[in-house]
Image (tube, rainbow, N blue to C red; front, side, top):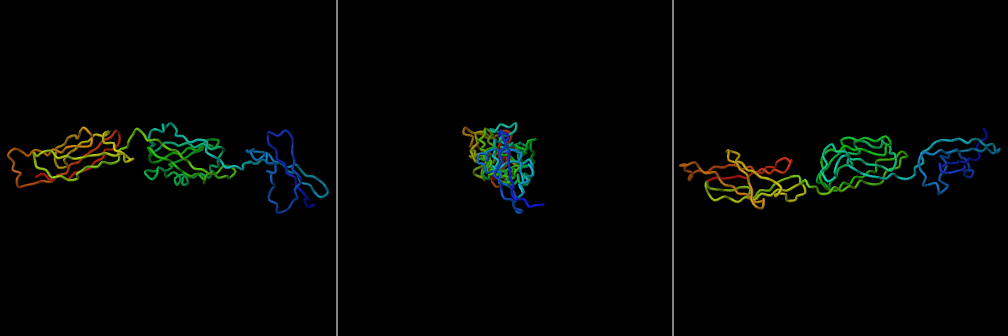
Length: 291
């Protein structure tokens, strides 16, 4: 066969009303492709397109046109939206909640793996984290649903997505940034009791004990909690309260009538329990010496 002398690519966009061929391009056995973007006006037009090419021999014999469908895609995808499914973002995020991420175009679902998402979703300024328990794509592959593990009730989510690509192999060059507002639910985290040990005499003046409760943001939520106390080694128990919600009083148990306690002392432990809404109770202890 006579070697090819030149080739002539042509590509068509749906909005074009007529065929427009490029100039003839010298042919080479090592030539890997044609530059279809010689017309700057075509760069913004993307999608599945049909391209054509002709080949001309030195004797002016022309073969073609030959055609093929290609995905014309030269721009990186971007995020269109991020939302929680059936979730009011003013409430904390729990295990099993679903995060939906919408992309500007169809994505290559093969570039997403559970390992990738687990490495991405480590969030909330180091105070808590959650991973991806699972994920799925919609039919168009432009919306990704991620099932989350762990919990998050406030803070800023920042997660890079550079490992996810579109159908043409363009990587997304952005990150998820989503700030969850402070919620009305202050999750009880810990309580502080002061002092942590006391010495009292039976029937003596009540001893002042200060208790404060804090949430996961280290905010004081004492006024939102209820407190109770109980002896670990006896049946004595009661509730703790004050006008401020932070000061309680320990009243030692009366000794039995006629009992001589002048030469003996006993040790016990008081358990202070804080309760807030549906959170698990938090317990602290005080060491007590009763003279």
